Length: 487
Image 1 (spheres, rainbow, N blue to C red):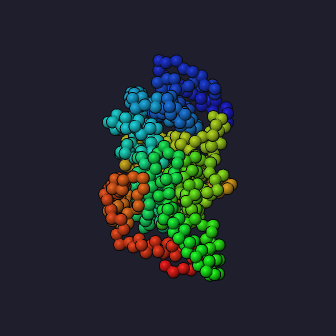
Image 2 (image 1 turned 60 degrees about the horizontal axis):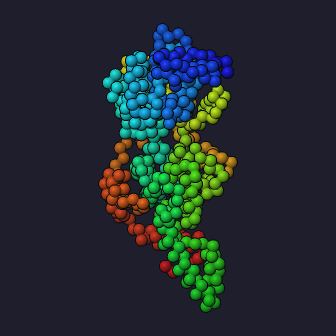
Image 3 (image 1 turned 45 degrees about the vertical axis):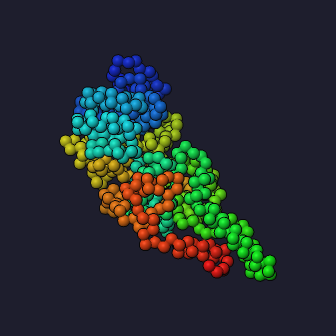
């Protein structure tokens, strides 16, 4: 295997006026030139793909990881007519504009990259004018358009997948703990669509400052801790008074409630937290501090959880989150690790799939790129099935994994093919005009939050008896403690 990749790296042909450096594997370092070209054979009849990545600058780690993945894919597809030409965007919008201008001048027929959404926006006028399709890695949807696509994992699909799975497992009341920024709003909007599609309600949305590590104040509000705590204190006082008068049943009940700080359940049975690392662990632990635990409440995440080590956190055990399908990931991880002596990030596999897509396109009539790229049957990549749509968005095969003490475990595998039903979250424009119950908002102005999420303000409880829900809630809590008291 090593000899194979040694040859691959020696196949780098450098064009440009700057000097080149030799990398550890014996080839030339493309990041020091205007562009580098890689091919594995005869170039007389070729399909040129410009790969625009931040090979220098702040995001160079990710750019070079993606570049490495594209080279692995090129070796695997074994298409002598497929040529990859690398251009350094330097992690800036101006760098991306210069890179795409060079790529166009050097006759590329397709662009892979850039990574950043602002860089995608910067190159779009030139690529659109020249009718050159772009397969980017951005996760920001507002830069997408016909002929400007992304393989990046989008928020809508992640949220739809995890919420739909949770509903199938019997969950019906969703709460959100999200950062007070564009990401938080995007997650909330996606959750609103997923809730309407699955006929469930979002009961609460809590916004926290994006840079905070202290979730105590916002979660104290979100969980109604003071109300639930005072309710229990009143119950304990009542039971103590009855026990003092010799009521044996009250004495037994008092013993049962002595280990409880609150009375009454929260009005959600799942909470979505698009956070990672120490902040995620801190947030989930704080829920426990306010008497909200799994499995009564199921903690849900997005793919960002994949970058955190969670199996050592008892409060997160049993939680679910979506990830790009691992159907062939061991192959990619092992090969990347062997060649580059480091474990790849999940992002890098998208670079591999982009080359697989370019390879498929290069073998067809390229007079109609759009129809080929948006083939409804999709493509099989290292991440399983994926497909692109005319508006630039995409759909991946997503597994659902559960956090266990032994590590993550796939509990719902991604389908191995797309069906008509899979189009629902992409093609159905979910109307949020008929939301019958507005969520309670914490940490942000209610009217502003509703407008950002739903497009307008909505009534708090149209046709919904919140007081009756609270009474039922308290009754259920008392029954769990085997306490029978009058209302």
